[in-house]
Amino acid sequence: MDYTAYKTLRNNIDQLSEKLEKQHQKHMKCKAGCDLCCMDYSIFPIEFHNIVEALKERKDKPTFNTDKDEASCIFLNNHKCEIYADRPIICRTHGLPLLYMNEDNGWELSACELNFTEFDMEEFTEENTFPQDKFNSKLYLLNKEFIAKNKLTDYGEFDLIPIKELAKHI
Ligand code: SF4
Image (cartoon, rainbow, N blue to C red; front, side, top):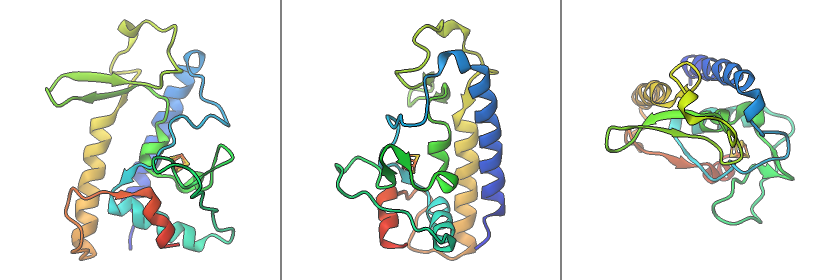
């Protein structure tokens, strides 16, 4: 399966995330060992299959943490992500100020509760926030194409798979 376009999107997201992280350095408390954002997210099949393939190639297989509660991510071990290099897109913007449109077509901003505690919300602009909808739309379209191209008829275009399902495939 070809993941070139997906990986390009992922790189673009990483670059923008890095830029925003530097820009907001003073207001972000994100650091190694903090796992407040790590949950059992649900991801598109394109991401799911990309992770399956990436982990199959890895010599050091990840350890699954199944002792935790249902909502926790199975790849979180001792406060560290076991699949950091291959983690899905949702995990690549943790902590950043995310700008998105809510169900009432109004703009909303979301950021980790530990960050931006002394930041004036009025200072958030299009230039210093992460445009979540723009990247989500691109991911949605790539996923739709991926399902069609690979004839993955079990999936609908809006279907998401919980990360914990990866344990059955690796
Ligand atoms: S994949 Fe890694 S970064 Fe994402 S929620 Fe799980 S442990 Fe956290």
